[in-house]
Amino acid sequence: MKIELLSKKDAPCVAKIEQECFSTPFKESDILEYLDNPIWHFFVAKEEESVLGYISFIKILDEIQIVNVATSQEYRKIGVGKALISALLDFAKENEATKLFLEVRESNIAAISLYRGFGFYEVGISKNHYKEPTENAILMNLEL
Ligand SMILES: CC(C)(COP(=O)(O)OP(=O)(O)OC[C@H]1O[C@@H](n2cnc3c(N)ncnc32)[C@H](O)[C@@H]1OP(=O)(O)O)[C@@H](O)C(=O)NCCC(=O)NCCS
Image 1 (cartoon, rainbow, N blue to C red):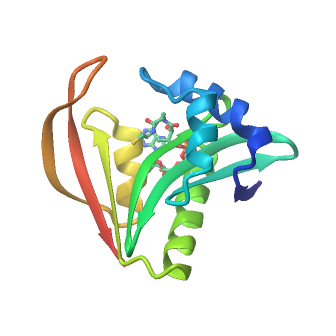
Image 2: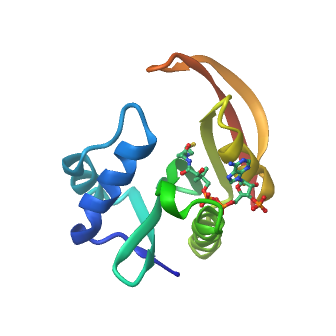
């Protein structure tokens, strides 16, 4: 498996994973638009030409917000999510970020467990943050 920056040709695969994973997915056109925005970043995990998963994040000054991390259903539980977060942390250190933060659905045990494994910790709850279905968000931070 290799981790690389998302290129435009892989945007349809990322949009497909978005559709598999989220009730309000980014469309391919959203992804292409974000790719042109310098504060947005995407890494993809690939095997040969297949996209196994991806992570998107926003970096402003020394802070990084994880927007989404997702692994295609057929490639889960084999370390793709871990490889993507590791690549993000390497990027953060190389680019002098000192704080990372994110929101996650409170029922999303897999993602919360993934983030905890890298030292993210819970700092609060945002009530009814998500729609479709309505659900609280857990807010998590990590300082480097
Ligand atoms: C969360 C997600 C990205 C994990 O991806 P993955 O590639 O399967 O993760 P990995 O194989 O690298 O597993 C890393 C860790 O995540 C946790 N984890 C992954 N799947 C899990 C599950 N079903 N139940 C509990 N913990 C789980 C474990 O802590 C695991 O570490 P371990 O293998 O040492 O136990 C994946 O389940 C996913 O795409 N979910 C849908 C999208 C989503 O909800 N994204 C998060 C948005 S905030």
